[in-house]
Image 1 (cartoon, helix red, strand yellow):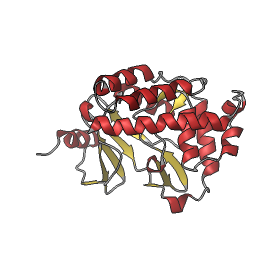
Image 2 (image 1 turned 45 degrees about the horizontal axis):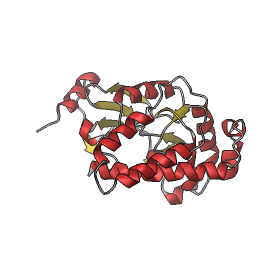
Image 3 (image 1 turned 45 degrees about the vertical axis):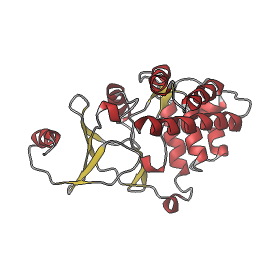
Image 4 (image 1 turned 90 degrees about the vertical axis):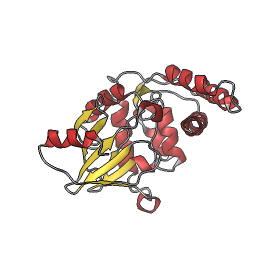
Length: 245
């Protein structure tokens, strides 16, 4: 059976498109590319996209469109379950990285830290969702450990936070970085993103320390703050996979 969302997209574009499925990891969405370099994301149903707020994602995507590091959205239809974008290149591999795009990532973080007009990411609502699924299970202690780690992360000025930065979500086109997959983004604690970047050796401690938001925060030890944020990220990632299964 043909997904009716393909028909909706073709009606919008006023032409037939031949789509090819892309093999992707760490997502429950289905991603397709056309022969004229369009990207179509068919959103996973709500029970397979745990913690995703499509309306919040839509607001975030609109707020970042002026930036070169943002995926170019042609039309996002969260109510219909699809998002049409321009091709944003291939994912970065470890061999391609080699630190040569660190300055671009630094600038990207500076830009994100200046964006404060997006709605707040509701951490507490997310935690309640996890708790309702994990209470009474053998993994509930991991949920409690995640909450402890979250409470230990130093509070920061809320800014645009992606919450899932990794090499699979960093693409390269015309030697420019594009950050994709904004499903869990919102105004939040920037230490979570910085911990992801530091752990993957995408942004050095020296570079992170030079960010204006970090310099003005007067953290006693940025490395300690990143360590606690990294612990939270690890628990959250593990629980995400657990609740999906």
